[in-house]
Image 1 (cartoon, rainbow, N blue to C red):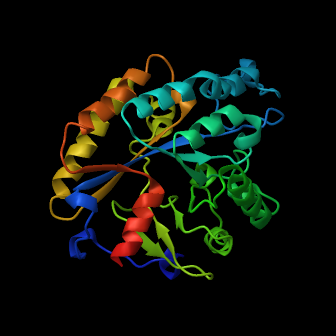
Image 2: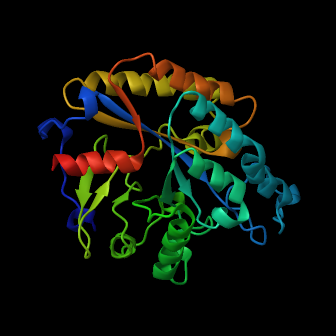
Length: 289
């Protein structure tokens, strides 16, 4: 059995030296808004409405339009909710969004959000004919639009091949979030120097919870509170990182947005919470090493 030990060592959290967060915070909370473009000329990988008689069609109008609703409407609810609470998010963004949905990308840039690489358009890394070229194109598109090279990367669908981490490091990426195996950052070895893994989430991700597991919005909110409470308590001894991953076409719909807002209103009642971005967590972790 092949294990990724050439990439990182096993490290039990109970045996680690405590690290510190800014202003003595117990927990770093970062929000990842996945902003994606789906190819209208291909079948939809994620279907909300199954095809009649089980025969998939291209174009898949209802499922493509479901995603497009997030860009036309749902995203703007996120932006308003986070701006009102003075919270800067990280967008895991398909780079072509900067051209095809330019007002969305412009609004995130003006709000001071971090832009994190997430491929060119939505599609698994292992299916790309030239992975290196796709990573380079995504990095260059984001650099040209924002004026700075992205430091972070989240693979579409968290997908990687054995070579992906090396290619990302070669293109100047400094942290990744595909590896959902810790509550603290850690170092990943590559052929082009180390990357840092900044904790992402499947537990507080609206796709697994609502689309796959069919949980209600109220259950998502309860899980956010329970996860936050536990990590906040553990963070008194050794600070933790908590990620919330959302998609405009899922959590940005009218019947769910109030639960999204309520999650932040709850966390903001506690002292010692650092609302931040993936890039800031990465930079702070590096400064501690």
